[in-house]
Amino acid sequence: MVLPDPSAMPDGQSVTVDATWALCLEYANRLRPAGLAEPMLNLAAMLAPEGIPQAVLQSGPARTFLTASAHSMETADEPAVLDVDDCADALRALHRLSLLDYDPTDSVTAVRVHQLVQRSTRESLAPERLQACARAAAKAVCEVWHERVDSPPLAEAMRSNALALIKCAKDALWMDYEAREVLSLPGASFYADGYLTAAAAYFKDLVAEAEPRLGHEHKQLRRFRLACGRAQRESGDTQGAEATLTILRDQLTALLQSSPGSVDLDEYADASQELARAQGFSGSPETARDTLLALQQMLEGEGFPPQRTLGIRHDYALWLLESNQTSAARKVYEQVLEDKLSLLGSEDPETHMTQFELARTKLLMGEVAGAAADLAELLPKQQRLLGASHPETLKTMEEAVRARAVAEQDPRIAADGLAEALAIRLRTQEPTDPWVLHTRMDRIMWRHWANTCAESPDREGTDQAIEELRRLLADMDKALSPGDPIIRRTRHYLRELRRFKRHADKLGPAEAARRMGARFTITTVHRGLS
Image (tube, rainbow, N blue to C red; front, top):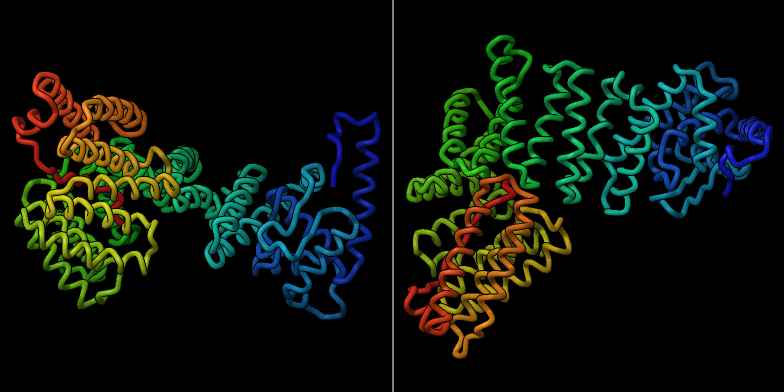
């Protein structure tokens, strides 16, 4: 359906087009099921013109809206409950009159509506009717989002529909508690699909808009702020995340003291746990450790769910480890693993996360053979349960090749394995994702060590590694907070490589490596805790 913009049409013809659409809609509304074509077009006018999933316009909220809006429904005292076939018939009627395109064989973008038709339809609605349409469309999108989004094309289509709805009816959505949920869905979709920078930017704008509309203590605003802090942290803006989550944690602390019933412990624990992660990844593991210790003390005796408590203890062990309390961290990890095996079983991804951390701790304590064996056993389980490209699987894959390289004294194992992992990450994650940046750093260093240990080292290899680290640091400076631990580590490696180059230029790569005591270093900067 191709239509010109009204501004490009001769005088009076835009009126003629509107009148023609009105006559078509009046006729479509008389087709069976009578009275449903117009409210169906009202709903479609609120959503993405390039394609609306069929499930949205056949959802429970959509059918409720159509039932209440129908002009006439046979002779029943109360409107009959519509089914999905009635919705399809209404769409066919609109398609027959060229008011929209309907292809029931394409579930993702089954309905397409020209933007001129959408705008004309919305402009014909009274304010109260427009609000009712927006609320119904929002509830329909939310229902499908939570129950049926099971493929990337559908996820992208749902995000487009949520954004289109927000663009044309934002004020109406803010006025209704249930409809307001749709405002967070684009950000949640960006986050779920790995577009972490976009998710952080979206939630930051949402928080800024929500605060004057809802008030700074509103529960939905607090949920938006938590999502914002999480996305900021995982996108690399750890300092921004710490600021966002400190505001939230302090606000919840004040509410617990002044109005205990307005905040549940689960919400407080979520905020504190996320804050600890932001603190730790900002370079303050001791602060993160203390935040989680205080949280555990607060929750003691409160009957907090055991699985949530295990997650907090798991994170606490990480920050013990990063605070150089390795033996204490190992003890906590061993206790947490025992409890997870009892509560969740050996096949649960949460159990696997702790098995991974315990293996990493063993590696850092010098138990290389045991760590390599544990990681080799864990990796195929995660590949089977999560998939080869899942972030947790990739973490294990990378740590496993590091452990093997150290155990077998062959840096080529790590260099090749990290190259494979990096290729997967670049296919599935943003180039600025902190894990992608970390894997790039690791690959550069292991490839350099492999070169220096070769029988005939390439003299240009060090120059290449130095240049790659310089480019990487430039990318890190754009994507990560200043002072991020991964930036400090990369700067350290750059200094070491420049020092190595000075020795190599005088003595040759092999002798430089011998004199500097080159050894296979284990690099583990953790990110993406769940």
